[in-house]
Amino acid sequence: MEEREAGHEGPIRMGESDEAPNLPEGIEYGFDQLDKETREGLRSLNKQLAEAVGNRLLAAAALLAEDDVEGALEQARYARRKASRVAIVREVTGVAAYGAEEWQLAVNELRAAQRLSGTHDHVALIADCERALGHPERAIDLYREFGSDETIDAEVRVELLIVASGARRDMGMGEAATAMLKVGALNSPKAEPWLARLRYAYAEGLLADGLEDEAREWLSKAVAADEEGETGAAERLLQLEGIDFEEIEDELDDEDDDDEFDDEDDFDDEDEEDDDRDDRDRGDLDRDDRDGEDDFDGDAEDDDYDDEDDDDEDDDLDGEDADDDRDRDLDGEGDEDEDDDEPEAPREEREPSGPASDEPSGQVSGQASEQANPDAEDSDDPTERRR
Image (cartoon, rainbow, N blue to C red; front, top):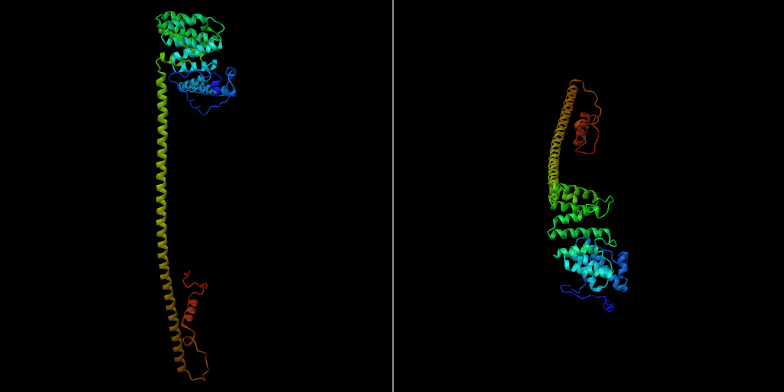
């Protein structure tokens, strides 16, 4: 409502919507983000409206920088509906329309901006739009009117000269078009921002006239003056040498794509190698487990053999005990025979010995074991192997 009362809302034209387009993200908005000239231009609006329009201009400028001319034009048109009497708003709308190749809209907006600001800063763009609309003579008239106006920036006047030269070529006056560009500024010793653009245009005129050698010379000079590479003079010179710069770029892009595919293949190969390595590790672990089981079985068999050895040794010991008993029995019999041969002597009481003892047989076997192996150590474990 405040915008309508302010009297700055322009008419809604055919093909336009009254709905506000969304502001793009990633942009810093606010009145303080505008340059000084734009802030001065919006001061005729109330604070709320000035900030709203300023945000639309910020969005349009950002979208133009990203080559989104359609989005920029949408934002600019909305700003123009809110502030159609502000020169900077009409200027931004005209520049966005020029980028979108809406030539008539661009002419109208830029002419309105010049009327409101009292300047001719966009005369070159207006002349180029007239040429695009099929009116080359109007472009030449604009050059005649403003080409020598020193109140206009030198870069704008050089651009107007280039547009007028192209308009003459459109009218079938090729040599005259090239002659227009043969000015003293071509040999300027200063690194002017417009110098590379002027030399490039002159070289193109020479090529159109069939003067290729001279064109190469001026293209080389254009390259020398084009520190930022904005004119494309270097690429054009390569084309004259038979090198297609676009094909080189395509080949480089293809190589980058191939490198990406190769990297993916390398990753796949590494994954397969890791899988194979894991499989081998698992196989080794399985074999180790099987070997461990075999060792365990072998140990069990060894224990069985050891038990059999222990039994055999026990049997041997039992046999040795039996032999000792028989020996004692024989000794006993020998003693009886000797007693029979000798005269009977008075008999004395003797303690029972050997088999006549009341001790258990197991204890006798243990004593025999000690006699058989006097170096053996005592042990409480009945299954312990003897060494």
